[in-house]
Each structure stands twice: as structure tokens, then as C-alpha cells.
Image 1 (spheres, helix red, strand yellow):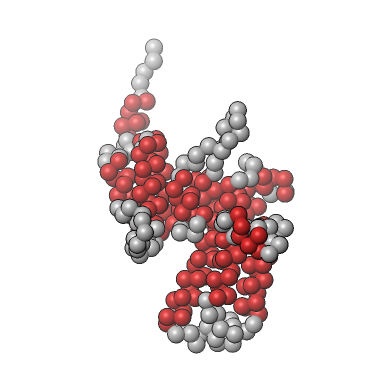
Image 2 (tube, one colour):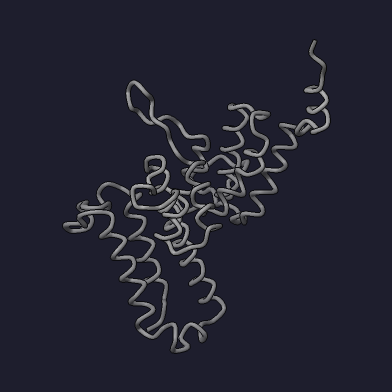
Length: 251
């Protein structure tokens, strides 16, 4: 069996059903009866991957025998699947109640993520941090969801344009600047970074427009640092100046 692109494509198409059009979503008409819940869709994805691994593709040398073009295509398909899985993980944590890990005997959400994903503390912390960036609070009176801090990058995460690494890289420098960058400027930076992630920075979307190459997380970090340098040229106030202001004598 050869990982010819169809198998991998089916994997991330199945994942995409959760975000996609109603007719193709869980229980939708496009599935000829559909799945009963999200867990069943994920089960199909796991089964498809098991089919690839269990067929002898991994251990038989088939992957080692791929041409360079086939290998790149395989890696691209796996990247598409990986980013969508990350988006689902982040959404699952972001949409949960604060401290939901305690209900399952864990000390924190981080520990629950570690145990559920079988990752380390650093990996759990990255997921929890990403979930806080995309979390949407609700309006107290109506219960309607409020806009998140990074709506455009949240959408880029959801559609598989970026993964957790890209989200953290793009938002890190601006989050570090804190209140020195206002809401309006932050939302403009959010839109610019999301457009850059799609290869559409400075280009109006339209028919026939071909996106540029996809940036790496490090590319997104560099652009975010440039934006911060423009919006906050003076940077943080030196520690010694803040300390000097707090000194004094009271009589």
C-alpha cells in the first residue's frame, strides 16, 4: 500500500467535517446518514491512520522508497491533518469551564491536557496558553459570545492555516507588550498577521489571486516583532525608573 495522498487527504477531510459546511458536517446529508457525534468522526480519523500504519506502509520501507516529490506531498498532507487536530484540541480546552480539570482529579487544566494527549508539561502549557488566546467570553446579560482577543488568527487556526506554534509565535510579541498596544491596534495587527499567514498580506482577496508561500512560525514572530516596534517604539519602561518613582519618604 502506498500513501498516495488520497488516504491522507481523507484523514484531514474527516477532521474538516467538524468545522465545515452543515451538509458535510456531523450527521449532515453529505455523509449519507452521518456520524452521531464528534467523537465518532475522530474515531474514523484514527481508524484511517491505523489503516495506513497497520498496512505495513511504515515498517515495510514504502515510505523510504518515495520520491522527493511524493515525500513532500505526504508531509504536506500530514501537516494539514496535524494543524486541524491542534485546532480541535485548542477549541476543546478553550470552550471548557475554567478549572475543568479538577472535576477529573487533575490539579489543573494543564495536567488534564498532559494526561489526555500524553504530552509533557511544556506541551500542555502551550495548548492551555493557545486556548486562552482564542477563548470567547460570553456577555453577562444575553449570554451571546463576545469577540475574542485575536479573531482573525483564531479563524486561521480553525481552518488549518496555522497551528499552535504559529498562533503563539504571532501573538507572543504583542501579548508581551500588554496594554501599551491598544485594542484597535491589536485587532489591526491580528488581521495583518492572519493575512500574512495565508500568503495574502497586502493583497485584496479575489478571484484569480494566488496566495504567496506560507510563512513559518518564525516568520510570523518576526513580523509581529516589527509590528510591535512600530506601535510601541519606546518599549517597556526601564525597571530602575519605575523603582525610582516608588521611592519616597512619608511623614
